[in-house]
Length: 295
Image (tube, rainbow, N blue to C red; front, side, top):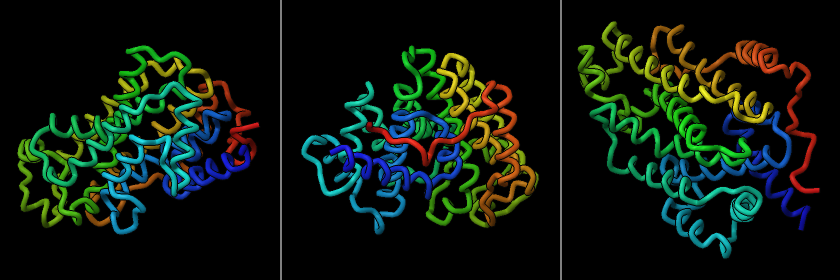
């Protein structure tokens, strides 16, 4: 039984290793079973996302994922179900944030062009702020309302990074997440967006959105010192490396139509080194290959 569980959790680890080197590196410093719990959450959230964005490659539709999750005790046919059963038994996590994330992903079926910042913030909460709610019972021993709020802000900030980074990809899918009111404020038209025009109006509009993300990152990291030390390091590391994507956007003259912004490996190493010093964890090494969730 223990061996089956470890195989199941290893499959979740493989999903995060392939899907997000940033999160894999950042949360690989956690001890077991916190580390494996993060991997399970990532794997299920990735499946929810893929059910909407890549339905032809997804083993389940979004409705099927929701139904299996509602009846989790009986769900089988995929490694995610025993992994989720383990997760909910091991940590004080509720199902509600997962259902809210599914609700947010459903928005992509009918809300493809955003008009207001308020709409964008609501969407960012449902698809990413909820991830903060999922992770907090794993990363923090007793998260109160203040810490939970910070975790939600952090998730929303990361979603803004996703939106800025993926402008070109999302346009190809017929989606415009950058609100029309923001574009209009800077004199950038929807026709310009369709053509992928990079001009001063575009730069100013994206810079305003970057400023919003930066404000949300500050709110998200406001209570970082209240986490257990390793958790605080991992959370801040993931946040700083993700925020650095926005620096790459600026460095490449705000062209997010023809290229996908990323953080060079050397920059990630520099961020990690600095944070290890700041958190007093210079000797800390990732544990991605060393430990097991069950003994």
